[in-house]
Amino acid sequence: MLIAAMVCLCAAVATAATGLWSMARPHSDDFVAQVLRAVVPTQLAAAVMLAAGGVVALAAPHQAGVPALVLCVVGAVGTVAAGCYQSAKVVAQRGASEAGAATDAECAGTCASCTLSCH
Image (cartoon, rainbow, N blue to C red; front, side, top):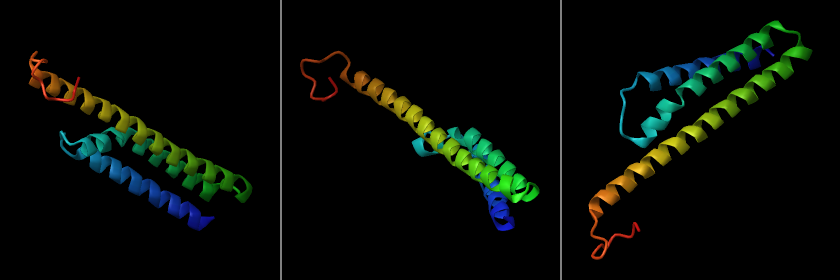
């Protein structure tokens, strides 16, 4: 149980460090950087969950520590997965709307002679 608790605590530190590193990076127009920056709150929440699981695994008896550790790890992974999905969806929608606005600006109302496949 000690090994699992230490692995969980190390994962919590790594997750929090990754989140803080992403938050410290400057704003960018790159979609990947935008998704990484949008996932920071879920990464910090997952770090808290992993840390709580590690502490419970160290302090609680074996019968209570194992289920709590498993629940915390599954919750942390689910939180990060949901955050990545939602962030990627929002950034993709924003990118699609920006691309649509650029395409509409290129047409400028000359639909009869337009060769673009946007309409």
